[in-house]
Amino acid sequence: MKKANAMANGKAIRKKKSALQKRYILVGILFAMPWFIGFLLFQLYPIISAVYHSFTEYNVFNPPKWVGLANYIELFSDKSVLKAFGNTLFMAFIGMPVGLAVALLVALLLNMKVKGLSVFRTVYYLPSVVPVVAAAAVFIWILNPEYGLLANVLRPFGIVLPSFVYNPAYTKPGLIIMDTWRCGQSAIIFLAALQAVPQSYYEASTLDGANAFRRFFHITLPCISPTILFLFVTGIINAFQYFTQGFVFASVTNATQRQTGGPANSLLFYSTYLYNNAFSYLRFGYASALAIVLLLVIIVTTLLSFKISRRSINYNLE
Amino acid sequence: MLKVRKFIARLLPYIFICLFSVIFIMPLLWMVGTSLKQPIEVFSHESGLFPGNPQWGNYADVFKRMKFGTYLRNTLITSVLPVIGQLLAAPMVAYSISRVPWKGGKYIFPLVLFTMMVPGQVTQIPLFATWSHLGLTNTFWPLVLPAFFGGAYYVFLLRQFMLSVPASLLEAARIDGAGELRALYQIFIPLCKPVLITVGLMTFMGHWNDLLTPLIYLHDGSKYTLAIALQRFLAEAKQEWELLMAASTVFTLPIIVIFFIGQKYFIEGIATTGLK
Image 1 (tube, chains in turn brown, purple):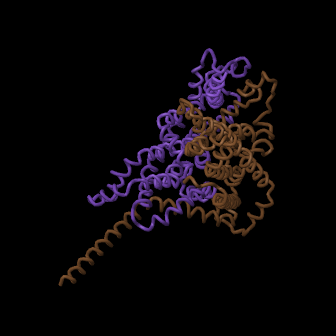
Image 2 (tube, rainbow over the protein chains, first blue to last red):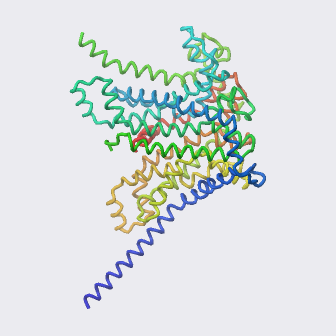
Image 3 (cartoon, one colour):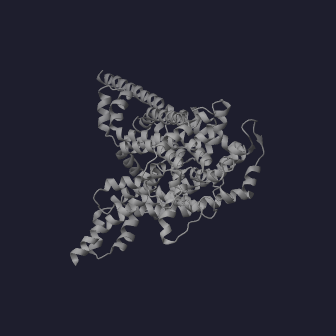
């Protein structure tokens, strides 16, 4: 009798439990629904659609026409792609590291236990919240070789500036100067990493007689290596999507909005070329092929960075 | 002698920091300074950073030349509505995948991370095709609607934070018979306030600053946001630097005001992204 009772009880509990579980599943689905719909509409469908379009000739207004690998074959023999890729690599492997180096320098300065840290932090961070279009307009004017701020500062030293907007050799350096000014975000991330380095490491090494340089290379750098890798990888990924700054710089030399490569295509970045193909030449199929290649490059970069991080980055602190 | 050396050693950081600060703040001063100059002062080697006789009329000229009111309204619509959408959707999704005991969360989270990796360029063309088939290009829908489904990065940020809320708090609420909606809105939302402010600020700034999306979807001058308007103005006005800088100042000012108000949340939000 007792046994039967207990069994019935257990059954009831189990029943109640499964009802609760069902309710949780329902709530889970319901709450995740916005994301799920968004994922289907704004991610999954477009990605599949882009893969399909990359094998077609398509201008949005007429139905796509299957052309097989033609877009990809064209892509690898297209001189403009080569040019755009070169310009993009320039920003990724010269521009971005320069910005990171300055960001680290700023973070090291801020980490020197100065008074009024929050004020200085604000000053360094402020440029990175300035809208990119406004920042570009301001820097085109600052870099004006005749009346700009930089020219005014350098004139007493007898330095004459080139045109950063018209001279194809200097357009990208101009962009790098502007991007470096906007490094505050990386600097704040570096600062947080620097503050997480255990103080005892420094104390011990000072007792051992290590100077500031040795402390930097043997303690600071290894300790913040995960952050360096993180910023480096996100920096490269962002560089591959580099668009707005170059577009605005190029719009000074070309008012028509059509060609956006700047003088001698020196500002033709990968994403700019993709944009031109899609929205100026209405070659959506070819632009989709460019986009798929971009996606693959980003996936490979990310996977590679995971591999590097597992092998040679110091995660002991976590 | 030792004392002097020590004093200099303590002063040195300040000298460097101040020097760098001047370099970082100068472009903004140059922007505001130029916006108050007369054309003759703009093209002169003698005029300093700020003119002796500030020309506030430059701002009035910009408002007249640029249909500024329209652009400002458009920019506000396309920046504020996404904030509302993001704040409605992202916490719900984050709660579902972090604190509701169901298996779906485990599968959704990697997908959220994956979508963070997919560049906008990939989805942009099919989405443009869809919006144009729906006849909704040249409207604000393509700029506003996606935010109502929860941005991957914001879901990620909120999930990380929600996981740090003690389980006992949630259990107590559940034992008291609170439904999941109440648990979310009465326990998690108040606790997540700092992150929610960060999410709101980032969404607002992202949309306010965005050039590419408006460039793709908005073709009619009356639909322009400030970002496109300024870019067009730059291409057309060319040498009228005092007006261009006035326009840039007006475009930047609201962001700077918002930044100062929400500074604490903003910088903390950024700083934590790097640690994980």
